[in-house]
Length: 241
Ligand code: ADP
Image (cartoon, rainbow, N blue to C red; front, top):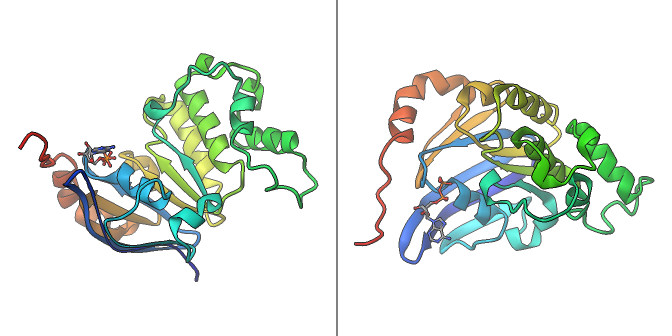
């Protein structure tokens, strides 16, 4: 089995504030991992390190054996809803098309517009393709963000709280789409929705600056008390010291 993601004793800090400490794990190709942890526990920072947006202070990160900076084309990223600027006056179709790397589908018979249409159909958003992105509901926009993350057909998907701000029905539809990728893509998903994600997650990482639990999803019940006590624990910020 191929190793898709490797963290080897990774440390990271922002301006002297240690956010990740001695983080080590291996994610095999095709696995689905859910990352849970309290706010400020370092989950988004972990994703940004995998994406190569940040560099570790110590330790090594490998994405299919490469440095993150050399692996950008291998990763599709769905950022937190609130971090995306929706005021740009473009349609859903154009928004997805903007993320397509020219040349990726050179060898394919599909042209670029067909690829975007195909992906919009996968995420059940073809009917809203001509709407400006600022007019979309939360659930619709999340599906467009997912389309953008998969448009280059990357083997790895990183999803940062993809179902925050959406209603229960849209959540269910969204997770059904993710489930359809099971086995075909390696997925790391940050979510508090343990009920939903436990249906398709293989393993759970609990991150509160360190990974304090890494377990198979079947062992969730055994670890629930310690997970919940950490989820709502106070994260010690050193700001203002
Ligand atoms: P989570 O995703 O688990 O909520 P983050 O990775 O976003 O956690 O943040 C971890 C810690 O790092 C928090 O204390 C946050 O305030 C701090 N942090 C995040 N981004 C920055 C930044 N760009 N500069 C300084 N501190 C940051």
